[in-house]
Length: 354
Image (cartoon, rainbow, N blue to C red; front, side, top):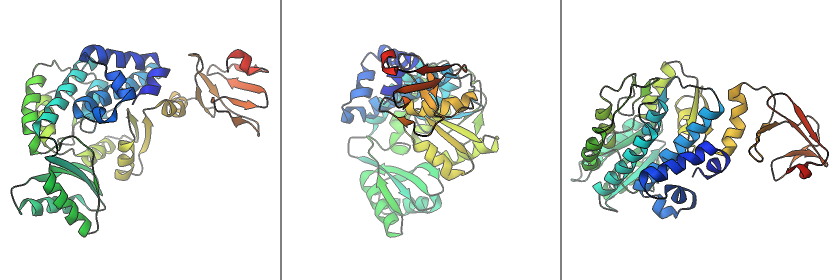
């Protein structure tokens, strides 16, 4: 998680180093090397994902003079959005999400809670399934994420989630149990929400440089009034992701960048609004593919970075092929076109470190 960015961009490596210093343990080693079972613990996973997101954000900000018109994050990602909007410093954010993860992990005993994604069924029907299952006893299951027209995530007691899964499957739905360490965004997280509020009250929030769309209400907010309340409520309330994306569209957004680890949000956004242009920026390959277009460069190809020198390559002649090291060559010759328009030709590219 984030390893290739940290190895390719100094600002990304510095971000992971900052997280290590702030948290007092080697988050970087855990994110890069695992073990996976330890990284999956929400107390570790939340700061790791945040750090990866902020590292990618800082790479973007370093490489391109680009400011967002509006920001939004899914669940934990709302803290990354707050950093992007200047509301929270990274130092504060990584400490808060570490505590948030610990509180969530401790709120419910291991194995007592579960989450599942229900697909191919409308959100209204999933809510009806929840009501049906709850009526059968004193076990809790509720909608945790309204992710789109045909994907809804539920959370609650493990046995209640299992019963809901069977009901949904019997009516033609597709259910995927999620590998999580706690049932997020439901009332079982109430103890975590109360503890998080105490932490939030110690933070100095700054008004955002752009609107932030809240998971709790799907509305765009231009100041921090009520922000601690919304962040507390988010722990026990569903993420209204479809409403968030539709809010972006209503404000005139037609292109979205998913910054950070993973590709789930990009896929969800396209299912909510097929007209949106969605790009991911989480890996080195993502940045190589998209940076030239964001910069407004018109040549073909992608960025290549040997020995900290970034080039743009394009191939003009048939017969050029890509070598394993990413350099475009024809025979023994190499042709590179730099972003400033200069062209380099190497008769013996390997002698120059390529």
